[in-house]
Length: 344
Image (cartoon, rainbow, N blue to C red; front, side, top):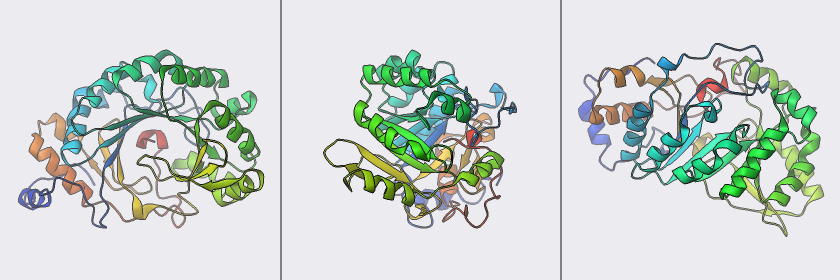
């Protein structure tokens, strides 16, 4: 879908806005926006971006910080209270703490978090904390320096330094996101569990997803998290656990420790029935489902001078188009965009 046409629907959308909340056609309340601030990244994880990929959007196509604030404020007016800043790698966007501070001041946004690869986190952790950032998710697929470089093209030592800086700045919880890949890093599960126990991190395992050509190539290494959970239960005394947050992870806890382990299973046990989120790309495209192509383009409307009431109406209409579920298993080739272009 291209840029939304307002004619003939404004009155209907205002009727939908009586309780100032976003509810999609399947009764799911939308209260979470994943906000991409860049499609650039300083790593090249093979399941996300090809090493030679350079076709990034030019900065003039990116939403400005003023435009981002307008969109998130409109979402907040409609009941959204969680915002996660993503990329690409969000720390490559200039003056990110400034944006964090402005987002933090939006009434109703009470959970402001960031997904990062942590390569540049040591330089920014303190300023992000002071700006009002609540929580951090850090991608970390291996604790072996050579293997980490093979997966990402980067240096593990920079990530570890970033994690240490985040701890010193007072971030808690810090969640470690580990994409599980059979034949690549599944043998590191126990080491990662111990690492997170030692450093008081939360750990989340994620199944690979067929998003773009790179993502589909990674599904050659797909492993169900049921397998990982069974291995953990053989090694550790596991019990049910809970963790605050707006994401889809289901948690267990290692008995005798504070470690909670989340399992994100978009393939083996999709969680579409509880989906509470949409994604806003850096160029202003509102994606309504990670595994579908349904979208509404906001940038042209913002730059034509759309009013705040009309912007809220557009968002209401967009949520009415949200599909029921993805079809990663049935149609793995359906989504051709890279993950970095969608927002993590």
